[in-house]
Structures are given as structure tokens and as C-alpha cells.
Length: 167
Image (cartoon, rainbow, N blue to C red; front, side, top):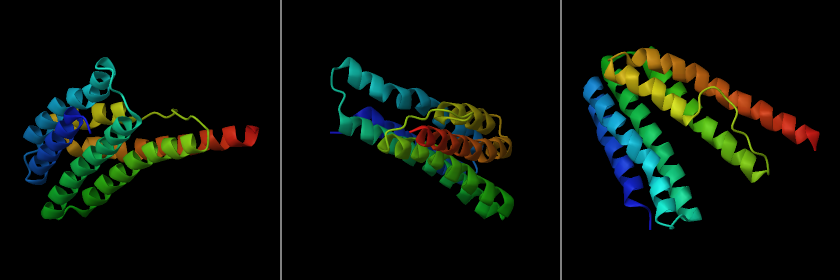
């Protein structure tokens, strides 16, 4: 059974994303800020209760990706309503880079390689996005994430390539 804290984090981030989609950027940012500790607690709580499972870790990871995507989806919807195509595309690139950072790591692990390199991991993306929302400058955050998340994915690809060629 998935941890209710994990689901609560996803629901809270979805509420934040709906607020973003409706142009309530600061309030959406505050809700997403409040969900950060909840997202960080779910795995720790399972370990403390002595209940960590592979499936629980899987659900935690998947809901983290959904949370990121729903937040970027909220921004994409908002910028679509504004007719601001540059930032629709930028939010898409930020979402793609964010997912690829995690995917490259997971795919590398499935091949027996560990890769955690990169300048914009999930925590750093959160630390870039949330202040940008709260200070109502989401465009700055999107530029940073779109560029650096994709660069991080490329860094991980190169890291796996280097490790694979050493074999």
C-alpha cells in the first residue's frame, strides 16, 4: 500500500499546479513549498517505521515525477492562456529535462551503472523553482531549469558512457 504521505505530496503539488494554471503564481508557489518537506518525509517515515519496501520506493519515485510534471503542466497551461509561446516551450523543456535527469539515472542503474552527477538534481530544481514562484519570477526559474536540467541529463549520459567503455 503506498504511503499516504506520498499521495498527500502529489495531491498538494496538484493543488499548487492548479493555482499556477489559474495565474495565482505566488499562492501556488507557497503550496508547493509546503509540499517539499512532505515529499522529503515519505521515504524517511517508512524507514523509521521499519516498513520500507521496493514497491514503496517505486511509488515514491513515480509520484515525485508526477509532481514535477503536474507543476510544469500548470505553468504550461498558464502560459498557453497568456499566449506566451516562448514560455510554453521553455516550461516544456524544463519538464523534459527534469524527467530525463531521473530517467537517465534509472536506466543507468538497470544496466548496472550508478550516476548521480550533474548540477541540477531534483533538490536543486526545487530550490530554483519554488523561490521563482514565490517571488513571482517563474520565467527566471524556467530558463535556469530548462538549460541546467537538460545539461544535467547530458552529464549523466556522458558519465554512463565513460563507465560503460571502461568495462
